[in-house]
Every structure is written in C-alpha cells, then in structure tokens.
Length: 238
Image (cartoon, rainbow, N blue to C red):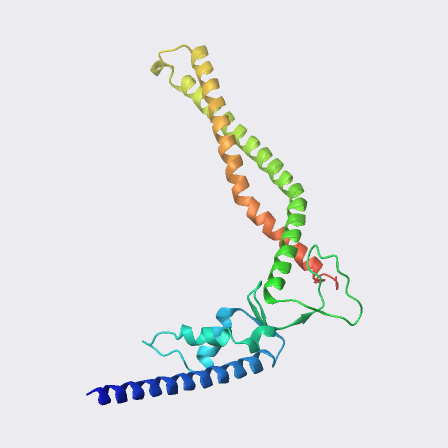
C-alpha cells in the first residue's frame, strides 16, 4: 500500500511539474507575442486593453468559462515588459510625441521628441480643454450679460402689457355692471391697481427666468459653434 501511495504522489508531482512547465511555456509565448505587438506600431494601451488583446489573441475567453486572471497577471509581470510599461499612467507601449504638457517648462529642440504616455496625453488634452473652456466662459460673460439684459427687457415690457390689459379689463367690468359691486368705483379701481402690480411682478419674474432658461443654451450653442468654425478656418473663403 505504501508503495502505491508513493507511486501516486510521484505521478501527481510529475503531472504538476509538467503542467507548470506547459504554463511557463505559454506565458513565455504570450509575453513574446505581446512585446512584438506593442512594438509593431506607435501605440499606447491601458492594462485593460492589453488584457483584452491577450484574451482575444490566445482565445482564452470562452462563454461560461472564468477569465484566467492569474495567467494574465503572470504575463503582465514579466520583466521583458518592464520597458514597455509606465505604471504611473498605466500605459503599455511606445509613443513619441513632440509635445510639452501644460505647465511644462521644458523646451523641445528641433528634431527631438519626448515620449508621452497615453494617460499623460489625456491629461494634456484635458488641461488644454479646461484652459479653452475658461477662455470661452470668460468670453461668454458678455453674452450672458446680454442674455440677462434682453430677458429683463422682454419680460418687463410683456408683463407691463399684460398688467395694463388686466387693469383695463377689470376697471371695465365696473362700468359695464356696477350693480354687482359692493364697493365704490374708486375703491374698486384701487383694488384693481394693487392686483395689477402683483400681476406685473409675478409675470415679470417668471417670464425673465423662463426666457433665460430657453434662450441661454441656444445662444451659447450658436456662438460656440461659430467660434469653432472660425478657428477651423471654415469661413476663409468668404
């Protein structure tokens, strides 16, 4: 019995060693393929994108089967990939871009380039967009002031017209049917004038807010769209 157990343990150990050897060979093959792929073109990939490429390239992802994260981790931790990974930016690959990021005091000499990772490029683009947005917002202050002015003037004139019409209609009621009123005509006129002020105030406030809400996005869209077209030179032929 002891000999049988010893023999079984030997078979299991040899099987595990053989399995480990096959796994090592697979990892080595995957690393070689990944290195070749990353160096085949000017590209920068995130860890998730690299993992997806490995799963697809080596058909490791099958419906109903778990994703072999352990195998992927072994590949990504191989020392042969050290020069192709920027951990700070989680970027795999090589890309040479002659561009200095925002706030970067470095100067590029003619004919020289600087390696910039994908994440760094995203930060650079985001910063440039933020700067452009700030400039646009600053420029849009004049537009906003104009929107406020137009909204107030339109709301004021419209509310005043409605209030005047309300006053005329209410006062006319007394003239047409004085018998239905318990107060004198002067008292009724005073009450109508007071009510008309409320009509004006409520209408003016609500109209001004509604007009701003309605026209602000339209004005901003048209102005920004035309500004972009101007910057792109789309009106150069006119």
